Image (cartoon, rainbow, N blue to C red):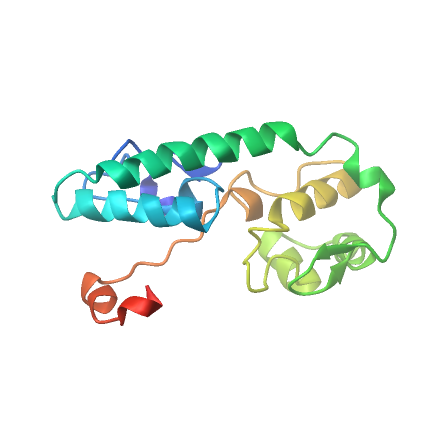
Length: 179
């Protein structure tokens, strides 16, 4: 998983240049941690410049540091408290993209699903536009709580970064406004 890159708290670990633990591989954006579009853009500039062996982008690196500090402060100020699942009703949406309710997720779990992939296909949680980035952690916790055992592998849903290889030529051919 994650192209063999070292993970920290479920995200690809990178150094100050965006380099991963795999030589020659760079990462940026949500695979390195949640922080929003501005942080991802700055990380992409830093990692892309490093990968191309260009001059160190001082301004972009400052934006990365600032963005990561903000993301950490936001997570500390608004943590998800233990016991959040106790206020759910049957109609509470667990996955907005696929409109999966708590009832629907429980029904899929109770169907004695054989594994994570089958549970995702049965419930549809994590299969929408966000690919589980928004609902994955909560769906995992709810399914595990409902089963009273660990159902998911640690790398499933909430810990599996979504990565798609893109050729530099494809990026270079895009109009600037699409980047």
